[in-house]
Image 1 (cartoon, rainbow, N blue to C red):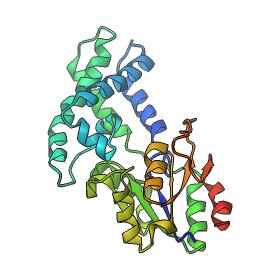
Image 2: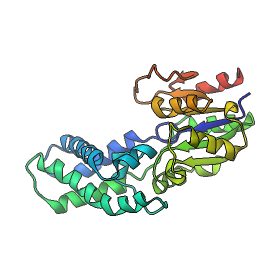
Image 3: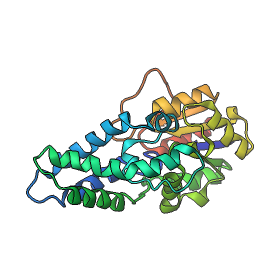
Image 4: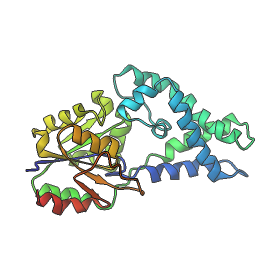
Length: 258
């Protein structure tokens, strides 16, 4: 019997990548006379390269915090020493990403790079829900399900997303990797949230868009899983979910059958 449904946050309940792309495009608009699409793409590529070589790459990989998120996180919550380190390191990283994008088109302008970094952080703070989310959560409540969120990331960013999207009060338990120092796909984060909900792991199902973190983690924790395909993401045969769908409401008849 399924007593609890756990959800990933980014690209499962709220849109992430489309908002990032919109913020990149808005930032690139500050550069007059340049190829703005190319500028936006180059900024993100430069950010990813610097992130992978940066001093906190291993920590960020472990808790599932990405280069794109590093372009707008405040790092003003959390006790881990790496959080304080990121708070000091990230401002320079953000400007450097835009500086590299500008340089690729022959422009050397630190003030413009800083303005673009600032605009991105401002414009990225949007948290639209996927359209089926509200009805789904209502239907799950009517079925008596306990609801949890299991999300990777640094505390300030994920808490900001939860508050900004209005989702936080709708859930009975929330596990953020940067708060408990354990990230998906490690079984510990699933054990933690099931404990908060008062259910056995075999009584819970994990719902997410990332096969390598959400589905693989659920399998390792002895849970059922639902994979929601967003933006054409490819299925990973190594991590077969119990249900695959493109719209979260497809899980309701599947749950009724459990």
